[in-house]
Amino acid sequence: MSLFQGKSVLVLGGSRGIGAAIVRRFAAEGAAVNFTYGQSARAAQELAAETGSKAVETDSADRDAVIAAVRASGPLDILVVNAGIGILGDALDQDPDAIDRLLRINVHAPYHAAVEAARQMPEGGRIIVIGSVNGDRMPVAGMASYALSKSALQGLARGLARDLGPRGITINVVQPGPIDTDANPADGPMKDLMQSFMAIKRYGRPEEVAGMVAWLAGPEAGFVTGAMHTIDGAFGA
Image 1: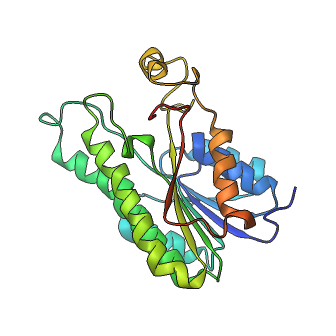
Image 2: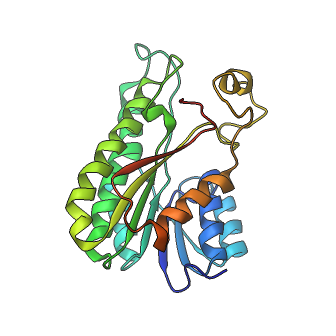
């Protein structure tokens, strides 16, 4: 397959899980892919070697580092922002500095990355942000900050769709539900609770999320922008 032959792609947060699946999908379809990573240096180097992509160490909590990574990638045809963290626990007990860091990674980084990419992005470019079904629905306690951050991405997409639409640049949010990753394994302690909310009684696969991202980045999705695309087995239904 060569759907993205000659396209320049940057994936922020691409070393593991959903991000790695996205890197593999674009690389397999002919794109020139760069991706950033934080602490997973070994996984990043192995993925880069496997896919022929380039791994760039970047702290997504550092606004200037994020902007620099996007700028150094040159004119991008496709930007995917996948980097994100979650914090569990009673909001009354959580460290304010940790919450601020979550917001820098989950909200500030997508905003600044998208704006910086748009400065050099050609007509018809694509910006895709990985959000969460928890931006629409939060059925359990202890994740208020995470839900806040993922809801913020919806406003980001709607607003930038207006700003960038005249150039044919689209921006969309992909909202996964429970996906089988290191951070939330399908056989983990949350399995029974998560599946109790779902119509399809299994966790999603990272490759399924990557497939939705690839469609949004492709030619058939040129009229799709400012929208949320949920892939969750009806977790949020």
